[in-house]
Image (cartoon, rainbow, N blue to C red; front, side, top):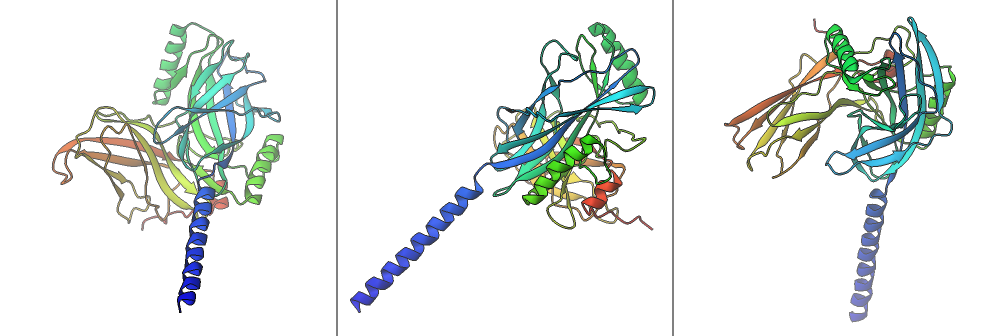
Length: 378
């Protein structure tokens, strides 16, 4: 009997040890850095008297964790980068396509901006802030975050005062304040930032080049994500494409929007749709403070999606991904309202913060990702 119990005890101990080893191995595998794939597209549209830039254009990505911290900088160093010219209106438009493959631990991140080295744009390296898109690196698998398109108007060379005056006129004409990056060889005005994916009918060298990376992602069963609402999400090659201007990042007494978007999770069918927002805390919140976020539901028959967030003391940023919504309406703006309460009982309102989010997506992308669209109201 004693011998039987000893054998049984040894078997149990071996089994427990085996399970522990398996769990440790699984945890180790899930915490390992994963490959992040995507394409960076810089589109330069020269105004009258301004010239097109010329390659080479070297880019370095600034990646930041949603929880804060220093930027991690990745040199894209794409030896196969493509520079293409498109004729749109009276001027040619120059577009630079660069695929990137980097490695990050699982977590939530966003692209804060780009370091640019291009002698035809500036004699010195300069930084282009983007404020997005956001993306999630999953545990135990790679992720494809799409084709990140940043569009800029280029002004002719001139003084800072001249660039400011021209920026003011263009902003007034469009009805939106445009962000200016002053360069002596010609200031850049950020007019659009969107994320898309290459489609089958893109037969240009750049289109084929982008499709190769997407095919690699599918072959390796990578998660496919597309944050489609920084300014809009549309094909860079659609004829007559209208680029919808970025709703300004809202700023209130306690909060400032850092990054906001609508996340399309293409690894499931139908594609899951959810909001993503990052808020900077501008002044200390009471210890018992609570934030209630209400995301407009694209389905007019449904209630807003609500998230209750309890910030920690001295927390500098708030990052929230909403529960998924059932469908979405393309070609419109959505509202996010954040109400800050000083107490958990929600009696003392500290303030409100409202942010608009754009969703302008190529119909080809919607079909490719099987994105459910809301039925019109009767």
